[in-house]
Length: 341
Image 1 (spheres, rainbow, N blue to C red):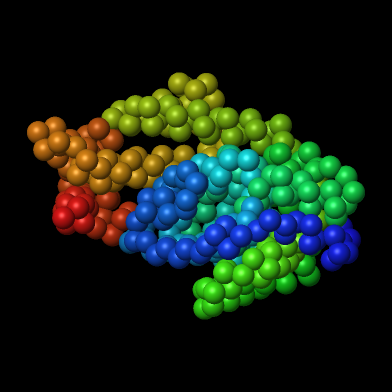
Image 2 (cartoon, rainbow, N blue to C red):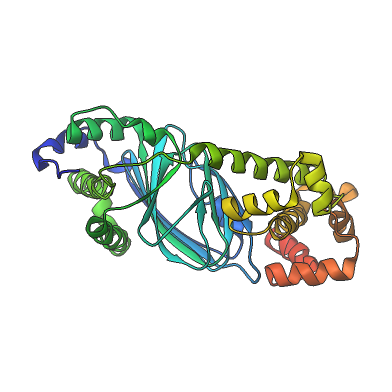
């Protein structure tokens, strides 16, 4: 893709007001707090690796564009939407273990691209990324001006591409520098002209890092593996109180254990038993944390919650819970009521 003439960009900045720009920095010791920190997004995070969670997210909203820098010390599966009627672009900054975006593997120079309504990112280790979420109308206008053609159809899919190396390296640095500059000088967001210039500059850099050709191969087999994984997850989570053996799970969904194992590794980067157990632990933790919202007369105990999520031996549940989240389930419950006053 060729660099567009700068003279084309000012038209994108018309009608901006300072009230359309803001920034937010969140540090959280709980995955649900980090997931819920973004206005107008609906995300759910599950913690996949063991230990106390620490995550942070710095966001800057410019008109039609949101910049994000996210880091976490634990593996996560992130699902949901990052705004409706937008497109998302993201690149990893640090990876430990196989990272999967919509079932596709990431490398250091990979770029995740697609519509914002269906996010599925699985990173089974500490992870960092930079990303940008763009209003569809704004991206369509820029795309038309840059390439004299409508928005490419492949953008409607969730896809991983290898970014152009030189622009990608510059892009990551520029993205982080811009966020740091705004954090240290928040008055920058009070100037509509400055806001417009920053937005157009960073948006252009993201689009310029996209490779000239994007291949849409292997989509049929990928979709089949994703459907199999989702069927298995839905079945297990619909009956969490009845943990299934891999043999029973495979029988219920009509597949072989080898194919199920391969599909989970391909789509999520981990085995079905490991992922599904982590998902049930996250479900139990979420229910324990919701205790403050339940009338005292109906409030379940930790043992009741554990049983509902298929953990029948309290000693083993408490030990596994502490390994996963860095605290006992009773400590989670006590913390809920301390924070609730």
